Length: 474
Image (cartoon, rainbow, N blue to C red; front, side, top):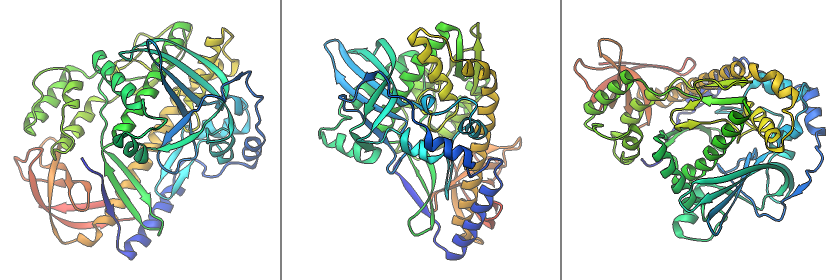
């Protein structure tokens, strides 16, 4: 499924859209600016250098192009028995004073928010894009996970240590994919090999990474806006496997110590599976045998019906949340899509809960007491993260809706052909539709008897940029 860009061309629509997006940011129930106290505290933060010095290890980072809040760095080597993966995470616990102004601001935000006209970071940029970020060619404290893998990618053992590191190279996904496809040497040369082995392990567990097509609203250099949709690159999936492996290790440590916080998701029930099977049959891509993860991995990403199938599969991946525990392990601890217990522990610059996971895991690894601040506030985290996740989802959806309305404005009054993705409502006369050009999804009336995968013709009668609403009729 190649990348597609839909561009808002009309200058009048651009102006109205800019106003609508600014109003959307202003309406968020989260402060955009940091207090002077938080800014000053972040600028002054200077943790002592860790005792372990790993600056001779040539770590590299891999992120979207232009990123400055670099949470992770890796170093991959072969060993006699398989591989050694070092995975360094920004040592945010060392920079944030519990109960301080930065801590309070981060708890209020919960996570970095991504708006079309700018980010609202979790921490002051002087910290998240400055002296806590794993930028190249500077010394940084980090929490370093070291994994010894067997030749088939199984984790034989792992450890977590606080160390001083110095990243050598800042890689981006697109360039790195091109480098690996050419077979050129790269700090990520082993990433394909290790990532594919870990994907096999996921399959063996019964896990299923959905890998939905990306949908990102961007502001171009000339101030205009576009929506970019495309399938994640293979290198992004290989890199994600390092993070998943680390999250599973963090969960293992916390479960063993009976204290921590997990990211959980219930397994789909039979009713959800039955519904999904019917949807795949209606689309002409029936899921007949094997695990659902195996079926999803078999889909051809160039097939135009793959998107409707993945949209339908999203209904299987619902109910994700956080569970905190201290003293006893909860009964339901698995993240069903990963098919294992899992914790968020690799993005502390951008996600609040990771700071707790890392602080707790480090204490367990060192055989010391879990910090009192982390233990005492554990029970607050699920609600904080749920609130921030809802805010992020609302911001993303409302942003996309407004940009899509701007994209469709020139077509008001026109008849448009679209593909039915998913039927909506009891009567089956409304559906989510996919328009090819511009690449927009929307809700619209459809003829009785329409099925997912069918092409329908609708007329656009209204596009309200300020409200992010579009209206069609048959």
